[in-house]
Image (cartoon, rainbow, N blue to C red; front, side, top):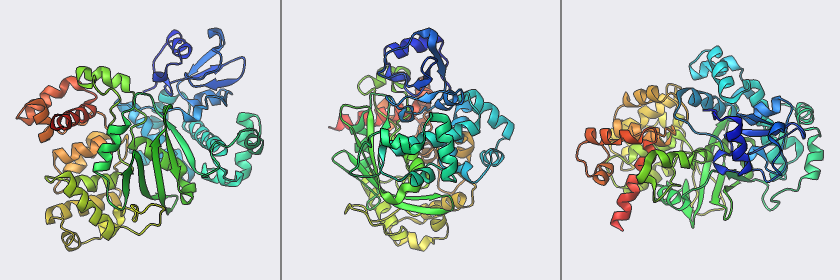
Length: 483
């Protein structure tokens, strides 16, 4: 939801450079024509010279240029439980995935299952700008990142950012920012020349990175992902603009900075935007930890920076959830590794632990139960996985952040072998739903000392709308008790 603060509150956040508000609004300075993040280190302007906008795109459509010091394109995004906000954020996710590169707004609305008029209205209300203006700004800000953080040629930057032609890119960049891309490249030093695809993903502190990577490392699918000394690595198999893009990525926490450093294989140059967006969701970098900690009260006191691990790919995460039903984490990891090794394609990487990409839903939709049972997967779970794959392959089901959660939960529960626990767990991670709660989870009931799922559900009402985060705290409390 767009932040609702008055001028005095926004100005105080800017004066104190409060990181809690980074990405929640942007400051534009009338005397300079520049817009900044609330944390910008530049001298604080007088209030009479300030304007406040709910998005970078809203500031740019009013003629303001992005600050070269604080770089608004690096600001973290926003997560929300509000239905209207999630709808607008879903549109943003699709825009970042390049949906409007080959379609129009009406087709975007149809894909989301709503009217074009409603989509335009909620988007304007959330971001203070129309869809086209927002999409243009997103492309320009991504291009600005590529010019600053990579050694890609100007043409490669334009294509990677989603521009159909170099001419259009040059014209719009100069119109918005006052100079052409080649001049900008000459005046801005490239951050890292050792690898052409290195990026920083910002977050609002605190972030309990150690707990996050430990959770993910225990569940990492052998051959597809791995954790090594706090560095997350995985292969990528991403469908974009009519073709599959495969490669690898790594992510690690930057010391003394509120950012995660990401390294992408050069083969992923055409899908930089979608990959970065998925990593933000995987590490829950858009959340507001202070708001969540306040909502959870004493439960979050020990670890206010605890995040909910998301999913890089919704189908992959859902398959992993089904494989893990009623067995240990270690056993589920072994099955997932066999599954990926048998059905996935080989992928060359510089890391010995990464050998395959996870199979897509289209491949698994035509798999047989016998193929899966030969891997040690039970017939019932094989049926569930195939039914899930067919629903996704036929565009009947979408497992991605900001979808209609109640409708998606109903679709999941209609599939064979998917019960309330699995559906809620998928909502928690693949749908990025902050209020998911698998009430029948034995670990949760044990942590609370309650033997009834219904009583557990009633008890957890106090944690709404952040029950997914409560789940993580409860699971962690069990681990700490054992140790």
